[in-house]
Image 1 (cartoon, rainbow, N blue to C red):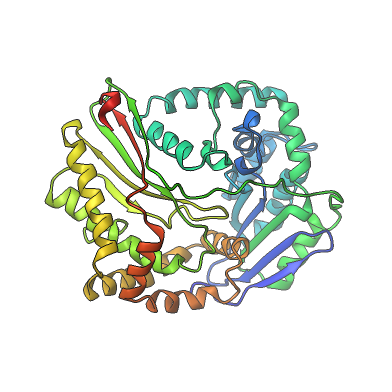
Image 2 (cartoon, rainbow, N blue to C red):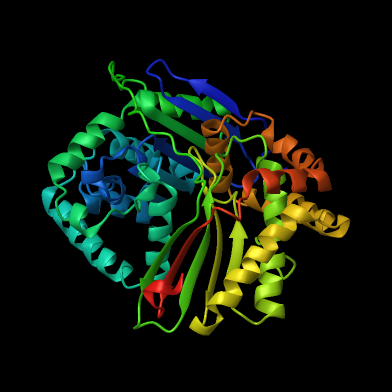
Length: 425
């Protein structure tokens, strides 16, 4: 079973929410601790700040230096990772059961008392600027960023999580400290713990390190603007004559994770362009039959999150194949809307999704992350048990219905980056 025992949801008096599950197979405990903060909540001028904060969380606290923290983790063989993402920032910890209390105290210290030394901030900022300069030389990444700009106008999802060179260059350590103080508060904290401890012990350990943390009385998340799917085609060509390959993205706005059509669309994805083998239509036809590319895919569910993700079909190919590749992708999008998928395709897709589901639970860290996703998207405590039935219940008619409702080949964003003329789109 993915989780040996049902998980318990605990809300502490200071507003911290904890999801706790016993997993006694190995003497290992994993923890994810996240706050609702990321590039989603940044202003345009501070784009990239959350990613920097995520990198700097373990660079020292009021009582411990970065070296103290690193040595304590290394001495136990534990894994401690900090991060700043799109909608969530925080840390993950995996430790042996007997070492967990000591390392939990360190993790709590990082969440409560990180101090962001200015010297470390400047070093991290310089590294990020170098990464951004290298990023701008990657034609595929440039195409993906341009695609997001067109699909998410006026919405924070249009920006790269890591920000831009001009915004990152102007960020300050004071801005990092202010954002940390605002968002890293107990009534914005979500924790999942999975491992070889009783739920009672887990709750007690969390109470010891977080129980005296006072909530922020005036805390509220910023309002995020809504975004709608485009109704007309949008195009952009980014000439990169120094490259050999062109990168083509076609698509539009997708769905949030909570959309009721999510599972039917997940099945559609596997049939259309998102299976690991050679069975999905777009990879099989464009790569294997037509020989247009080595890498090509299409999906709408992989980026579905708290905000709508994106539907995208991608192919990297030679410039002379541009017209043929775009036409072939469009043909497959129209075909899945016009013709019912075969019973064999449907059965294979459902077998893959239900059979591979267990691989999301190979480690306690994966199980803890699953609990976080269950909470964030309000999937229900029994979702792990309902998932196979949700997939198995998808029919041929369901796939046809959701493909017609959620794909719009007549109003696609098309972005092409590589050795191509500006008028080529």
